Length: 192
Image (tube, rainbow, N blue to C red; front, side, top):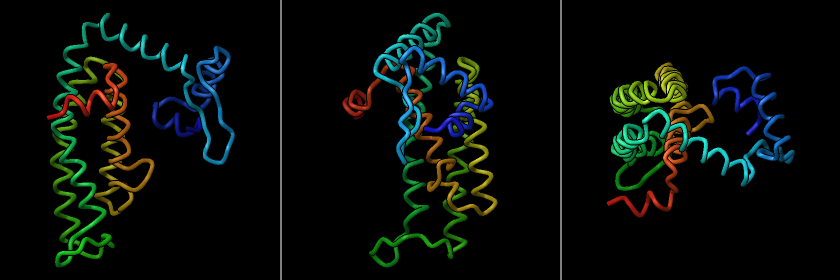
């Protein structure tokens, strides 16, 4: 991920992000891939240090169980959000799924109405999470911004851009997994 994208995702000024990246690279915790699809990423040792630090932070704040409870509630919302994103991108005409060209304003309004309802629950959940770990407040602001853009007519802000509701939701999901030390594989095995 570029320093500019990391600035947006972290809600930090880009010069601060660049300073942190230089420090992480100096410790060999992050590396820059200069290729056309490259960007900054954590090294294996960087990921290990990050995982350890996140675990210690949770335990020091006594937040492990409350964050895990929030994660469980997030998982309850996740299938609905994924269905909304799918419905935003595709619709069914007759029995055939087709790409949503967004010419049916009533259909789009119904899907956005569902997204607004999920967002209300997500905002409540993130308010609670941010009271436990400040950084989760960033997701509240980013999800709100994506929803506002979608409501204003930017179709890509539901599921088709780096700043879309779906992309921010995905990043929140990854953050929760990393924070709690749960792999995607473990998550799949635990789901009913």
